[in-house]
Amino acid sequence: MKKPLLLTLVTAALAVSSSFAAEGTTSPYTDAVDDIDAEFGSAADGTLNILGMEVSNNSTDITFTLSVNGNISSTDWGNFMIGLATGGTGTTTGNAWARPINLSSPIGGMDYWVGSWVNSGGGSQLWSFDGASWTNTGALPGYSFSPGATSSITYTATLASLGLAVNDVFYFDAYSSGGGGGDSAVDALANPNVSVTQWGQTYTSSTTGSGGVGLNSYQVVPEPSTYALLTLGALGVAGYAAGRRARK
Image 1 (cartoon, rainbow, N blue to C red):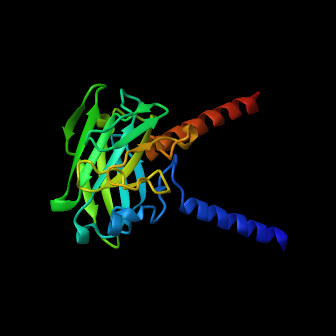
Image 2: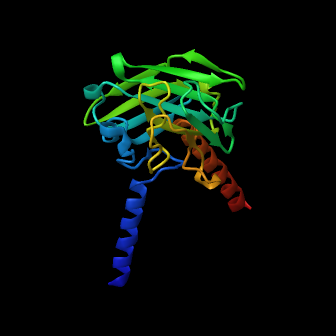
Image 3: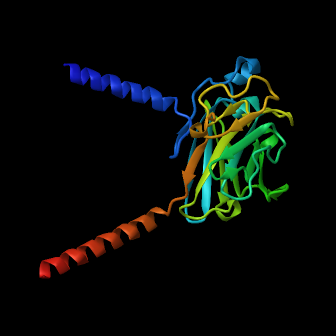
């Protein structure tokens, strides 16, 4: 009886651990619920509370779907951002919106920034960093949000616009914030704990392996059809080799 009980306890522990996971390498990425400081009042339980994000790609585009706690239509406010390090000439100090949010990764600093808002119909911007300054490259080709008991915000960009190709690995974090230009990361996807305790407090995303608070990574994958072709090719080679051995 002890072994089944032990297995049950281990399984339960793993389930609890995964439900409060932060830094991750595969989609979906999850964040703890209610990990916002009480300093932010009703925002702590509302739409600034990030619940998770799904990331996927096809041969040309990549899509990020952010889930937040609460109905973004009923509150009609909030800014949501994504900072990315793709291995380009990034910066570890600041971002395109001059928010007190930094990012440091094993492949460098932040070289792309996605900024968005849900008020007044919503909107998005994609920015790139060239080593000296940020450039606004325009709105994302795909941006939408769906209100509900929990709301989702979807971002689609071309891989090329982020300097990415199949098999590339990049690092990223997502943030929620207020409408003020100096507002920080009220909640951060890759951190299961309170991120900041004041609106203007500086926040830095970095990997736990480097002593940081958390930073996600994602590898751009081939499309399923490409996987299928690769698998069939491998099976064909294996079959041919087996046939040659049998004939010998």
